Image: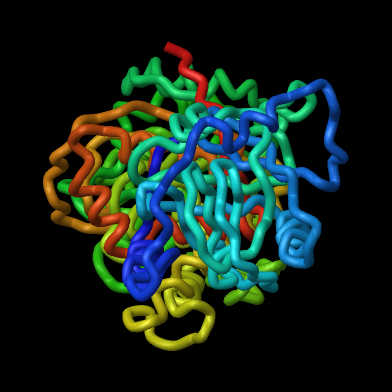
Length: 463
């Protein structure tokens, strides 16, 4: 898992710099750590009770943490029963990694001199993993087990780090199969697309819908028929499906949208259904913070299985667009698009709260997957990686290299894998800036929170 720093956390961390662990009013104690901090926690053959353990997942490393016996650790454990928590942390003071939990926990502060491996709650909503020492009034949450101080520091690395808090040991033999798999090829050709699809081992049946974006103009970076045609034609009687826009343009009316689909060559591959030609149907949203219902194209219910073909790229409002955007904004009717953009308020889609909009995309996507009950798969094509969406008729020219094609049954894992590949690229700065300037990673945070999918995944190359 790559290291990613969100815009949201940038603001939080700025506050920490001025008022963080060991403030300027009371300087932190000078670091005097040795390798003795957690050496005694090496595995001695005993097994800790499962109710006393959580796991911190950092990339390929899983660190068991023995939880403290207090109400703070108990509250954290109860929170983790609802799902994993992703913390984007930064380095502070050359002795700790600290990041926001995104929620408040009860505190049990006491004056503590930390040791390497201590997991600490700070100010009720910050979690800290120490790799050196510091003295301050903190709440103990637990202690990392089974690694030395030097090993811990190497795992935490330099700079920013993503930590996933979980009650599940995904690296154990029993749990490893539960981690969603994302398949990848660097071969961006019709053959590569079919190969990565076949790697899923899917067996779509019934009335098959191919969900894609038809693009706003010939200049848009929509998926070309030359790339996707062989895959589309490999299914029995598929239908390409789309919905009209809510903002005008060449796809604002069904007649113009169908003409555009024809102009872009999609009607030569399969029939094209503009699903909201006859209005909307309503899907229930469960577990959301903003939406109670989602409005999708009226003919959505005509299909048994969805193949979601997405061009991964930036987006002027969402920060990025991939599988989640394609099943939320993409499947939403014109009415539904406005509803999502407004964060469920029914107000202006152009001036809504940004986080509410991002969360609503995840919630709308969850309503779609709930109804389909597993009869859906996702493929993201990472080419023409512009900072602008395919809904832009004149998008910015990409300034980074093409990466590949990825496929999964989990839309969150798939989009997260694409994000990680962008962040690890040497030439991804422009797209990263677009994502972070819109707080785009919050969509993934909300999606994981409500159970749409997992940000922890296994990437398998088929090359």
